[in-house]
Image (cartoon, rainbow, N blue to C red; front, side, top):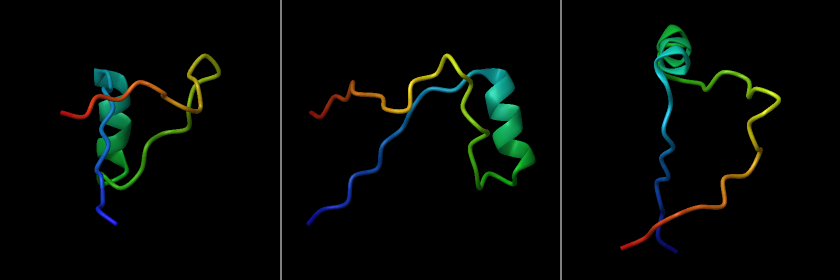
Length: 43
């Protein structure tokens, strides 16, 4: 089994919160953010 690393875009406010966690955690999701991001592209 191969490991896939997935990325998702973040805005400047969310990036600052990630930085405050020493780059170890995403902040809690906002109510309008979906739990699952079904869009992926694999070349």
